[in-house]
Length: 457
Image (cartoon, rainbow, N blue to C red):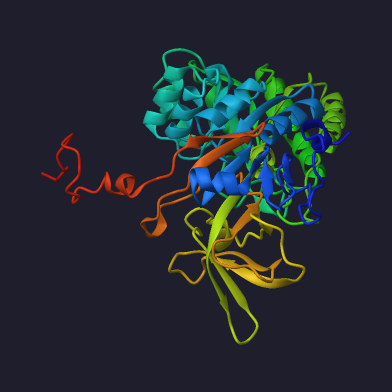
């Protein structure tokens, strides 16, 4: 039985172009041709919450955490909150037995608001401030990942009770995707050349820092599970070196995330079950080689949990058909709610969401509303040839790194985040209004009297 079948018993036939590998597990099409997510029609979502809107299939998000826990039964699953985080989403992760990895004071506060147990929160990041470290220690987070040499002294000087820490190490592996596992990047301590071992020695000299394990992140959008096997071999070798020289057994190996998901039909994806098999086999051989006790494995999927659970709904504002045959479909959102096209050349799948398409389709470029030439959402995608202003379009696989990377570009308010489940929808984060955008502007006449403008002396 597939993951789709587990969470989405068939009610209506799925429209052929809604690839089950890309769209939310709870997506289907009703008798009138409307896209539905979590049992709620796109037209109803747009009427209730406006457009553009981020919509998340709650059952899909939860099911993917359960799928990881089943695929790696001996591992701890920590959801990488930077992919998508609000109080409700943090609560979903906690409900499903996952912890949350956070990378800022804001993400930490959100995870705590979502009632994630502090012991299951990991603070990550390559440039943590003193204030963020203080907040994490005060909250009692389970682990802090040390990423830079100065962070060792900074953290050691600010704690007065034992704080569990990990050290982020960088295996000498080039995954060939968005890489965080090669030496020429900003994260962690290189295994090559003894940098990582030097960091371990420094941490072991700090009485208030309790080094419990090592952390590594190979990159993003990685489909090959063999890369994780090579990382395990390299990190276990360092763990054995630490044991032999210091008598310390590090009991945790955090393999990060970076698991590939498809954005278009045929794109590669990582299979959690295949990952589980490689992790198990490689741990067995590496630990046997060094006579090292098997450490606890931690994985941190983020995109792989959230991406396919989410779609973005847009309203078509204008259609421009040029004499050279090109057609531009302009919608009411753009690079403010999806910066990944302009910033990462991301490719997406788009579908008409409010009605059945005509018999004919035509290639179009879906563009955003911002006065930037690079403000595109999808180029040369097939949509109904009769698409017109007022239609709704849905973009698949926008659950990760869209809400979290959204901006108020052009002073356009950010969209709401809406959850759909069991035929009902609720707003998790409201739409940003013009009043919100002006609230911090000291020149606005409606500014609250709560404080005067700060000026240099």
